[in-house]
Length: 184
Image (cartoon, rainbow, N blue to C red; front, top):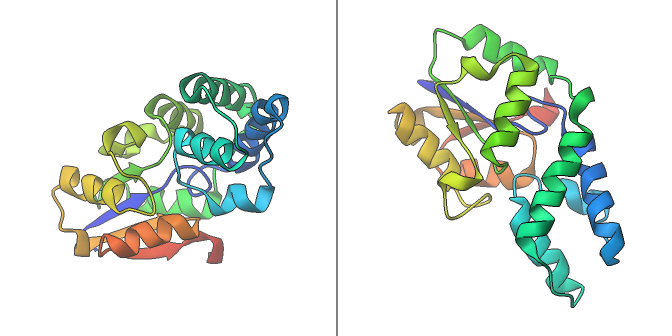
């Protein structure tokens, strides 16, 4: 393969428990539920889209911008204990300097950058594509296609590392090879 593209949350960084605690914290006052299995199934979907979906299903109106900011702030409050996903970070470490690499995430840029910086790996990646960079999000392929474009590599020559079915579907739709890190 000519390039590697990594998801961030749950793939490079074990952030999913902190994200889930943040969701529960900000949704509870609104009486909106978010079962943990559904949270994991929606991995890679930006917070604003999840808020819109959950509130619509509950028949409630949400201030999406405010709740998105609250969710990100709650996540940051719980993020001190974030650790690397060792097997995946080791793959990136071995490829570093030899293979072009990108991070393509449904998260917001400042959160993804902070997470990667906290792990000491931000500078490993030539390209960072986040929720702000594409109009459509996983399972649509746009985030991965944009990463390949910025790396200057044909999609079929990229391998994506992902931890969710949504992300794997996005990689498949992008015509890329993929690795389900849950199986590593």
